[in-house]
Amino acid sequence: MATPAPGPIDKSAKAISRYRDGYRVAQSMSGLSQVCKGAGVLAGFVLIVFGTLASAAVMRPNPAMVAIASDQAQHNLYLISVILSGAFVALSGWIIGVVLEGFGQHLKATLDSAVNSSPFLSDLQRVQLMRLE
Image (cartoon, rainbow, N blue to C red; front, side):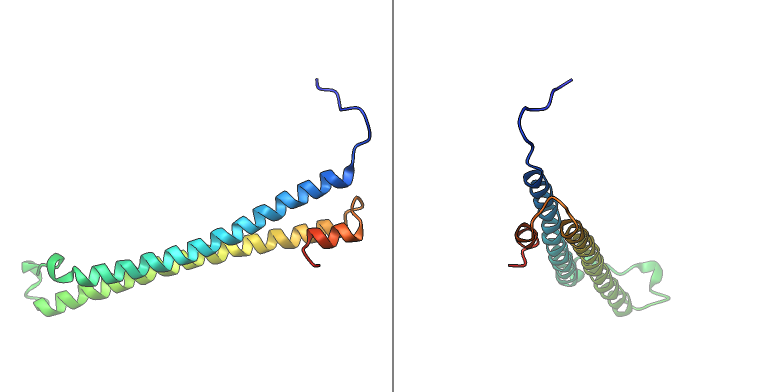
């Protein structure tokens, strides 16, 4: 079993270190949320653009459906499905980003509350940790 180091323990330094790490995690979550939003919208846009451009090469009329729908109607259905798929991908990425942003903001609020009520910190240290200066 390890024995504690001799000498006084600076409780405020340990608290500051812990709170700074928490704020870094919250900031990282906020940054990741922006990446998810951007990547989701970009992926949806790319899916729509390339799906539309490739529609002439990829879309081959289904002979079994000729009696039900013309070649043009089948092509339009393909385009609509590509656009809806791209919109779904973009919306999914955006929603994931918003959820991550919410978690990051919740963590920041929780840390602000903990820092504000910490008996180990002075008012100046609280202001510096919450970046209110």
